[in-house]
Amino acid sequence: MHGNRKISEYALDGRTSETIFAIPGFSMGIQQGVAISLWVKSGAKTVEPSVFFRDDLHEARAQERRAALLGSLADDNFQSHYSDATPEASNRYSFRPVITTQGYQDWPSVSELSTIEPLLGLNDNRGQALHDFLRETISSRMKSYFDPNVSFDELSQLHKGLTTNAASFNANDTRSHLLKESGFHPENVWPFWFKPFDLRWCYVERHSNLWNRVRPELLVQAAKANKFLMVRRHAPKFSDDGTIYFSRHISDQHALHTDAYFIPFDLYATRKTKKGPAQTRLALDLDSSNPEKVPNLSGSARLYMLSLAPDPSDCCLSEAEAIWYHALAIGHTPRYLSENADGIRQDWPRIPMPDSKQNLLASADLGRKVASLLDTESSVKGVTADKLGAELKLIAVVSRTQGGSLSDLDLELTAKWGHLGKGGVTMPARGKLVQREYSPTEREALRLGARAIGLSENDALARLGNQTNDIYLNNIAYWSNIPSQVWAYTIGGYQVIKKWLSYRELPLLGRPLTKDEVRYVQEMARRIAAILLLGPALDANYESIKAHTFPWPPNA
Image (cartoon, rainbow, N blue to C red; front, side):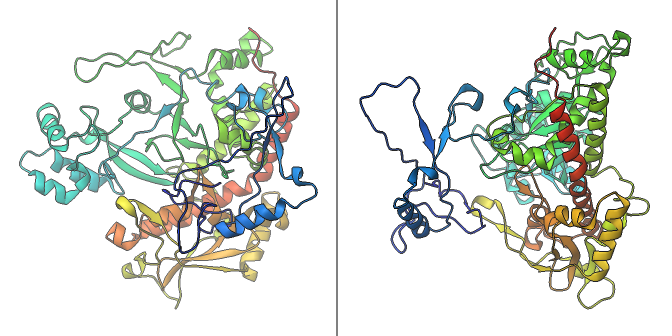
């Protein structure tokens, strides 16, 4: 019945949605989620109960949805509106039918491939006081926090989140404790994913409860040059986007919607120290030249890797990271996401495993390409460095409506992409976007570039979209030619470019964008376009693996 009006909700067409109980001019309807079920007691004894589910009433307005419901009651084939549901352990006893590709439930989940349970990202709960866009800003703020000569009132002027009490957080007591036990340490300033493609800086303080959840287990694994998959255990109902992200840094707990979990490529041992909280030592029982570090592979995953080697001397445990790059490739495959959206929404994504080392390594190579495109700190030949591919060169060109060069004053983001909502939460807004056809020059560049990477013009348009957009900073400056599918691209439930812009509207950021930030949006669009153009190769890889899938679990 589409409930919970306590949060913003939208229909499939983007219009604000109403609960079916809303009455115009009288009531907004019931605020909490509501389900209506009809139970019939027939007296007949059945071995297996039947559960039917209906999910075709998506009209935005309550009146429209009620009319559609009542109109369907007159259908001669009323039962056709319902589908069978099969609540069972494999789908967490969901009353909603789950449609996945054949064999999906037999594939291992990303959690089953890992030695440890995935680790949650950090939870600030301090109004974003512990991270910021610039390293200098968060460093300066935290230096003041640890300076006993800075009063509590002065600190509040820097950021109210540091001085506002919250659940289990007494701001004054916490600061007093930290002034005695700790101090500012520059090495505690770490890169920090706030959202996909939105890399910021945070201050990591392990002592006391300055962070609501600082996640020491994750910090141990991230303290060295580790790599991670960021995954979701559940996805929103209508989400079918990239469900796995690549990271070399820690993140906010909500960097992916609803929660971001980390799976390290490698595991580092921990030791108890005299200072700070005791941490559990990981049991590292594999042979390794470095006893403090081992590949993060479960027992089943290790058996799988061993089974791919026809000769024990050819054991590919040293190539264990291939499993995680392979999972990343699958997690960004369009066909995998569309075929298995129901399964991905319910639990950890399940990954088909190739039945040969050759196929695993080939899939992992694709995953490495995806990782390099997601890793904004790495340059990618043909995308962000060297000679750009023709298909990307004209994407997100920084432009001025009246021609000429942009000045610093032209870089104020005032097109209303974001605003402060209730409780100081940043909310995305409509902004200024002009949708249009590709120009002849843009179309020709796309055709030539597509041919160079083995795609037809139609293939490229199918991935990028048949139309493009000009995205405005203000009435003067804009990014020209951001294809519709690049603009709409989402990762972990967030529309990537629009989300990035929403936090940088002038009243929120307090300054114009820098030229580097303007170029970053250009680069972001080109990286996303390159990921989309990998779609045919990712789909072909997925189909090949489905046809040659390793039976799970492997035999000892």
